[in-house]
Length: 318
Image (tube, rainbow, N blue to C red; front, top):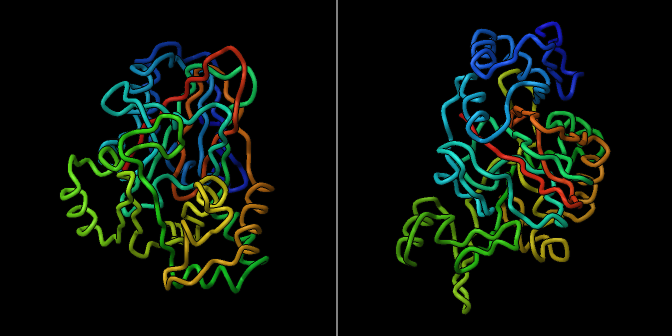
């Protein structure tokens, strides 16, 4: 199976098929652990690995499978993401619980916050009858194409960085892709605790009459460099522009350059256009496990339908 690894940046994603020689979870764990160096080298080249046909069937076996890679756990509870999730083990939780007719647009995991994982893994326990693909997009490829199409604005984005403004409801709203309330998002129980945490993070904030909270981040990088020297498009611009409430109509409501100037709509449209042309739809099969480098690959979710309940689980690593 190691013959599937080509260490080429042209492969995306790298697909590793069980040749039938691994038929127990214990054997799978040992094989991954033994071949950690080769697998991580491949991940650093391509940005995403797909394991197909391995003996992974539920949250507990997925937890054990992923632990073989040796990453430190990044719990969802310690994040500042406001997407609604359900925990199944200490490190395994549901993918974004947004309704099935809602598209989750491409994003780098938690890049809209100063705290984010390096690795995101997804496990398909049950694939949808129709749709439900996980969208993957190489962040370095997107950067390189934007450097040709929009060099001036990409340079400004790299120089100035970005600020995000997020709205958090008063209490969790499971019907929204960003429905985690400010209490859950910030791990607090009072307004005073929330304000202290936001102050320490360098955020600005505003309370609203309905008890919801809007918070603007400090300046965050939108372009990063990975160990290989490649520049990557690491942010949540696409998800914010296409999916956050009110941002498509007025982008400055949710995103702006780090100097507070507006990001031109034509630049935002070009980013989305190139990303859509570059994206790969991972059509899940039951038991599939993907391991994604958060810096090298953005991800999202297509809407889905059918009687079968789609169930994709996630774990994060650093």
